[in-house]
Length: 85
Image (cartoon, rainbow, N blue to C red; front, side, top):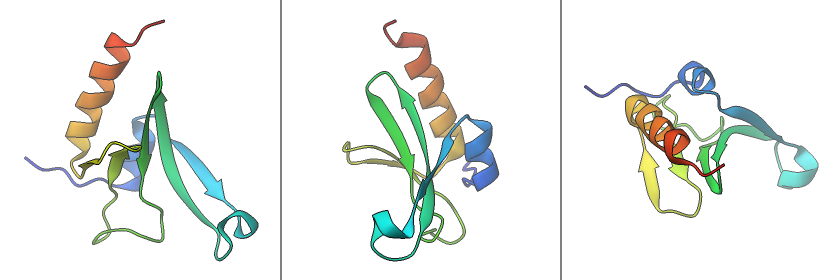
């Protein structure tokens, strides 16, 4: 079953909100969410770039995209369990 990703579900997984100011963006300020495990960083799309009111999570520079919150949760569990200290 596909569970769409909401802002609330991303926050419940422990993602941190990252603000990008108007000065840094060169335009309008925005925010997105990030979660880091070891050297792997998961990032969401920005709040002003939602796909049909749904969030998307990607592996930074990995060409892999998730639209199902259950998949992201499973990935985080696997990464956290197997990360080197």
